Length: 166
Image 1 (cartoon, rainbow, N blue to C red):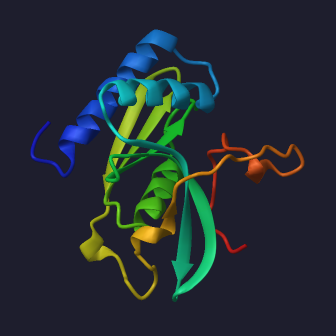
Image 2: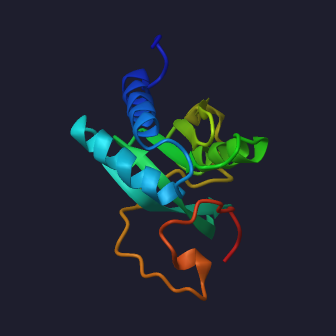
C-alpha cells in the first residue's frame, strides 16, 4: 500500500479478510467471520480487541455507547458486514465510530456474495472537541457479555448499532 495512515496494519487486515473470505465463502453470520478474522490477525501478531465498548459523549455528557466489532493494534476500527453490498449507511456508521474516538482509520469489510471493503479516515484535527470527548478511556476492553434473548443489545454478535441516548 502507499503512504496511507496505518497502511501496514490495514494491509494486513485486508490480506486476512481475503484469506477468510476465500476459505469460508459467503453465507455465514457476521460472528463466524469475526472469529475467523481474529484468528488470522492474531497469527499475524496483531493485537485485536473484539466487541470493545466505546462510550459516546456529547457536550461532555455520555449519551450512549456502541460495540466496535474489532479494534486492531489500537489504531484501526474494523466493522464487519455480511450483506449483499455495502450501503451508504454502513459507511456513515463507521465514520461516526471514528468521530467518537481518537482512532482515525476504519475498515468496513463485507463478506457478501462479492468480497468488498472500504477504507475510511477521519483525522483527529477535524474532530470537534466540544462535541466529543476523545479520551482514550472511552474505549473499554470487553468483559464477558451475557446473551439475553429478550434484549438484543446484550448479544456480542450484533452489528447494526446506532449512537443513541440511553
